[in-house]
Length: 63
Image (cartoon, rainbow, N blue to C red):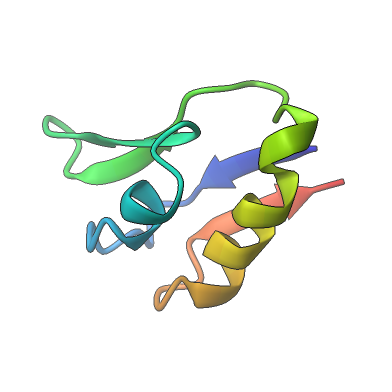
């Protein structure tokens, strides 16, 4: 699974709070970023949850 954050990110940091192991906030870009190229198995479900809960629909998941 690959996860990307689009330019639509509003920087509300919900994904960072939900799964700090995968998402972190880039203070320079003022948006969240993904720490992994390939998401480890143990974080896939929470990444899907983050995408579902993203108010800006800025989290894209490629299976």
